[in-house]
Image (cartoon, rainbow, N blue to C red; front, side, top):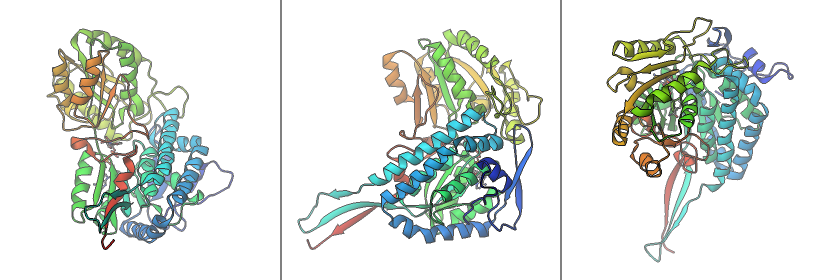
Length: 488
Ligand code: NAD
């Protein structure tokens, strides 16, 4: 089922239009509430779809596939660019909606929308470069070709922490390659998805090419998408536990899967590092999105001789963080998405202290409406503690000391995850050695973030399979077909 929000007053701002009228035309079925995590306020009610709607969406995507794939790359790129332009024209409204349903500070939300849109522009161009090969023949009477074709109908399941960018990062390469897509957004944040679909419709996206299935309980819908023979590819971003489950479910129909899963990023600071750069980067890598980012720094490993200086500078910066409603000017730390997320963080911090960690600041829920956790720093953290093994997904720094480069690498790699890693050093040889030695899909040297539409994003080990963005991102949505021609 294609879900396009109905416009109310033509003059209404996009966010108000979606909140006032989030239901697909004629929806008579059940609904579920969307809450603002910064205030606890009820924002609106969204369609709680079931297996029938999921099947209808797959059917529409199957029916639209041949004509979408049959368009020239240039035609698909033009529609993608029209969508991109509408998104940027509505950037402030999309950001407001995102902050309302997810909580992140407004400037971060605007950054997310622009970042997501950059994938649409990138893949609109890449659509025109889905080249094949003419292979040198092994017989004078034969010619050999390899062509790349869209894989088919794609199911995209996305998380709440980047409710806008994660959709664009998946949908853009899929549509560019000629696939059609059914999106299932996270239940906490369906409004950004509805707004993006609305803008896609306005940009001329044909019926059935892009559909949205919103629901409160995802398992049933995901089962339809993973079991359906017409769905040829699952692209999932979310937790490692759910990723494993969906991968198993996809086995029965041997679907291609891309999995962007959880992380447990080390943040390594050597004694020769520029400590101010390291601390600035730590603020970004840890406190962006209140620490609810798959690439969030999770384990701070600091060379023993500079640990006191690093800790002092970091605590000073943390004291300047302002928790609050992301719509209010000056807010630098938004809420945790919901009570369950907050309880998990609190449990990890409490257990770490029971296991011997020292609390330097924070360690409590902020008493105010909404679900806020205080910026927290724990020292004397060891690899054996639960908090070192888990993805914290909150504004909590864990500090551990190391003595040698070999020890730092061993500690950093001591995790089942392998998404992002950060390291800070000014030694030339180490700048080369570390990225090669760290078992992660992305390594940031002397900076506090990774991620660009031009660069491959993805993990190794239990952090996932496949890459999004860059020139390889479109390959996830294409099949290579060999064509042999005899009798030449
Ligand atoms: P989640 O796994 O709980 O949910 C992700 C999506 O899966 C949502 O749409 C949800 O509705 C759906 N889902 C949940 N349970 C399901 C089930 N039993 N069957 C089918 N679908 C189900 O994750 P989350 O809490 O929404 O997101 C946070 C996680 O996502 C973190 O682990 C984070 O690291 C990860 N993440 C990874 C990346 C990346 O690029 N690697 C990016 C963002 C988030």
